[in-house]
Image 1 (cartoon, rainbow, N blue to C red):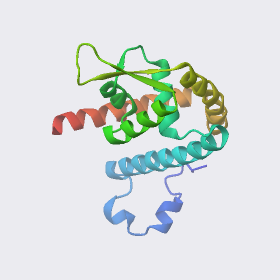
Image 2 (cartoon, helix red, strand yellow):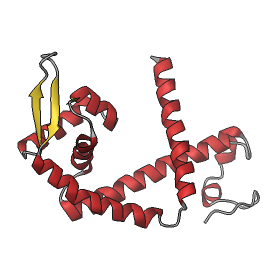
Image 3 (cartoon, rainbow, N blue to C red):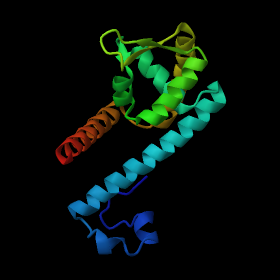
Image 4 (spheres, rainbow, N blue to C red):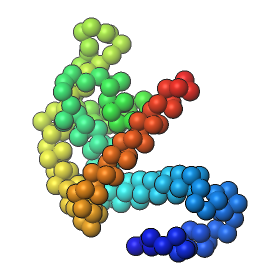
Length: 176
């Protein structure tokens, strides 16, 4: 557990002596860098761990079960564009995932009657079965990883991450 002492050197500081040349101690840059570093490390470790556990337990890749989960909780009809936005992924990997899910009978794509260029995507009963298989495994993983956090810690972390996501969207919109 990290120390609250301002004098305690973190392992990162000890192993990267040039760090302070870029990020003066106690500066806003220092705090922002540490936050983004922990955000990136946590996201990578979470993704890698969950991916390996889910693949072993269910045979489903992250892109497949995440897509199915979003479809299972979305109010139909859902377009490819909306699904792409909700998953925060680009079209080429989404289309590959959708093709695979459709080949396996886990989703259906239906022509959008109001826009011939667009298709609606819906989960099939077989896709719902996959979600029902995946969800308990995800719950076990979350419980194990977040077990030491209080509900208030998790609510605070959620608020912070939501603010970061909104900040990213705002900056992206502003930069065109």
